[in-house]
Image: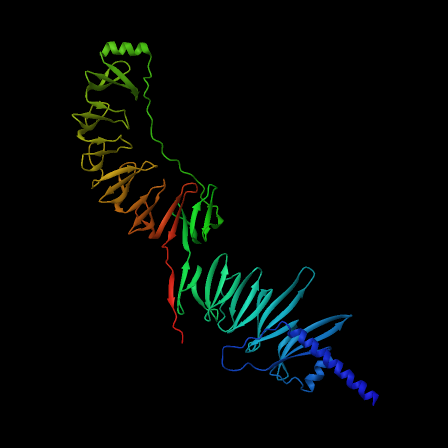
Length: 503
């Protein structure tokens, strides 16, 4: 009698030990029922202290659950080693290669495996699909099942959603939460994305925040997106999301502002670091560069009233209220017959006669008749002139260089000319020849062969040969002079409004 009691007590202790071990294996299991109306299959956990006990139970067909998750602890050289697998109808469907196994849904399991070698120690998690005998390895440090065939997979410092039914993996995120009863919202670096409960993309563009106006109306506030181009037309950064962007004083660095004053920096080193010099305006001396004795000798010889400055080794002198030019020897080059005469530019001097301006050569050839109200200096064989109604560019022979005239003009920093006609702007080169006809609302010449233009309130890029490098799709731009870059913002998207009809 005492012997039978001892045997009964021994079996009770073994059973209690197995129950405690099974509870230890299942303490971190979180089973979420599928959205399907079909009830999940029955599964159970079993723990054996040796391989022989497992084989005995398998022979006696004691593993009666639909899925039997089995753990076997063997002692090798005094060190316990645990291995786990899954059986279905006494047949192994998940091999005994893992430390622990958790059932999730249908025929899928989360498996953990320690990988140890001389250089590496890792604890990786896998998703094992028994029907296809496929092990999905994310190199994950943790995997959790949240329902609807969706897993949260942690890799490094970030997470992704994985839908085992569709095979879809979402972009990485830092945190996630449930939004309403329909969505999962993720967040990373202040960006948010929206997925349905099956981790399908609902709003692909990252947004700042999601506003629920009422029970069925939602409003997603999106970030602005910027592209950055070199002034050669090469795009170096695409789709940079931020509220605003400001060039930094440091080379190839921009400050990105988000959520009021929060910001981070974006560093980029373009391949092209060359700099093109800006053409400087010529300055002419206003001092008479001859001795006093020479001046007095010339004055006695020509009987002029005064001489003003030297230009191209010629002196402009005034006599009897009119102006002309002579050389330093006293030879008259341009007789004193003009109301005013300017310095020499590109071999031409502008003269005013009877309140109108024209141009004369050093040989006193009046190639451009005094017809204009304003006459600019000649540069590279062209000069800008104004007849009182229209601006134009004339050659040294007095011919109009372009087929049309302009309402107004303005010189750029590179020596080119903005030309305006009927409220629109174009561009002429420093030779006065038309590069881009006046057909845009705005044009920027940043001393390169690529220009920013605006058409119908949107900005794009155009080359000097009139090739459109970038269609007008931007609603704002910034010229970063320090880095020779154009910062262009996509059309500022208003809140993305969508409505859901709930049953």
